[in-house]
Length: 243
Length: 327
Image 1 (cartoon, rainbow over the protein chains, first blue to last red):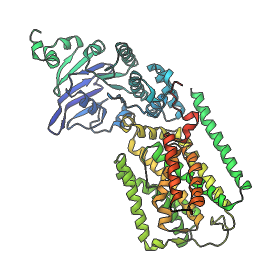
Image 2 (cartoon, chains in turn brown, blue; image 1 turned 180 degrees about the horizontal axis):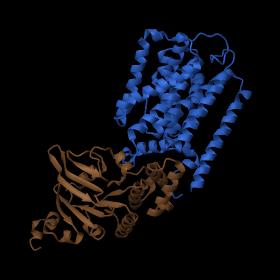
Image 3 (cartoon, rainbow over the protein chains, first blue to last red; image 1 turned 180 degrees about the vertical axis):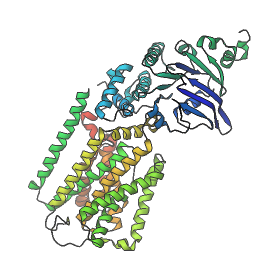
Image 4 (cartoon, helix red, strand yellow; image 1 turned 120 degrees about the horizontal axis):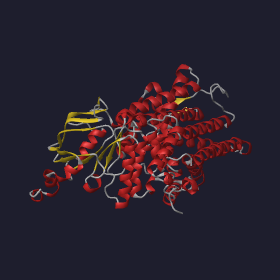
């Protein structure tokens, strides 16, 4: 079976800065894939290219057997790409359930159905008790969860998670990890960007390490963390010598 | 929770029906023409502000150029009537459609602008419209158009002896604008608009086509405002560019909504109910006493209300309080 998501030789330049150079990755159906790398490795850029925020300078992006390189974000969402934002972008003047309804309207044209779907997703993500609260009144961890809930309401085939576990307390992070597992068990493929290795590694089936805009290493989490190239990218060459 | 929501929607509808019913009875008790006049203007501005609120309140695209659509409604109606003998009812609809098309035509380039730049563009465009009409000979230029009066007639929608038909039309228009808003509030469009207002980027990622949402809001908003313009032209029976397309109309559409509660269902009606009588009363009671005292008082009242209630007058009612507040 073909991969659900594939990037083929993707380049992204911002003026003189090369954020992504010749990145080719693929994500299979049902996988949880971690996209990791030190700060400035080009993770967020690649993520935005996949979500459709901007088209790549060069190369192509394929989703579900279709070339989506130049497809706008809204259309990608309709095809089944859901995403969260690293800096949360809740609809602050709307209630939690209304936030989620916006997502649910992608596949439900009747309001009553969209509302039912939204409540279902809130139940799934553990936000049911906060349904009628204004999004601006949520605590940070809940806002992260709302991002996930909103994206899930669009019934995606692929869920892109942008640092949803970063900056949470250990307990909150564990709840987050459990939620990601639940999402995968519901049959949704997950591609997650994180830079906190110790949280992501036990969770993902496969890790892709980016460094300086290129794919550095790709493989099973256990192998990736031992790879000298990864250690040197994260900690500097000195630490990699003994490995 | 769904039950609460449905109950609240139903309650809004009932309150609106009761208010409309009471308003319809008002002329039985109010025979004074001056007061009737104020009521008509209040209802008209409530309707206009409610329409403005669709684009600027719900969808968040602040327009200070809606006088353009108001004027287009007025001019379309009177030009069709005086030049081609088309009944005002058709002119009204025609004006609405033309205004909606122009709003979308203008939206095409201007919806790419954000925030203050969009506001400035709307002001400039409305001023250009005003200048065009002031110099358009066929449309009467600065002299304007006098509507020929041939006696009271529903067909021609003109009345000399009584103001009541105007009152009922303004009330109907106000109800229409309110009902359209009520209906859209719980629709895909309503949700899309609020999402676009709060965060266009997030909206886009959830499948909302931001550009189309703005276009839709602009069209509905302009259509209803133009109907109001057509009504105003018939009400005055005389129009010139300044009296139907002047900047003050753009302000008088925005102010009630802002004062009452921008992007809320009841804000525009509430704001207009206080603001418009206040405008008229300050003008007639202290307007003659000294230069601009009425405007000073008027301005001070607006400032006072905005300072005391930054979320608008609707926040006086418990429903508009932030729902997440612990107490």
